[in-house]
Image (cartoon, rainbow, N blue to C red; front, side, top):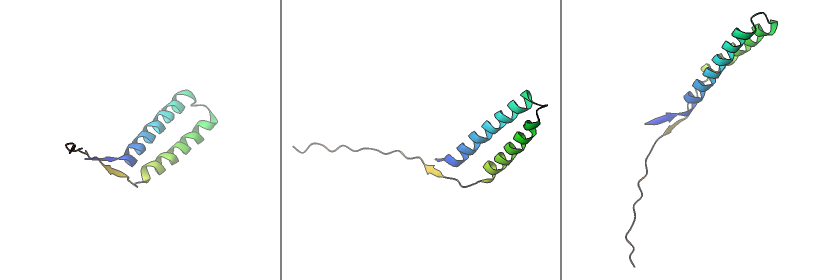
Length: 71
């Protein structure tokens, strides 16, 4: 099994962008800057989701052999 680090980071950033978006929508609907912030968030989200350079690291288990002490 392998771990896709890039996908994990993309998912984390997308979750954070959604949290910021919901905060802006709840708090400042009449604020003139909120529309600009939402536009910026949309651009960021598009860039994050568009980058598909995956770094996949294989998981492996090492076994350690102990040799008997030859004296």
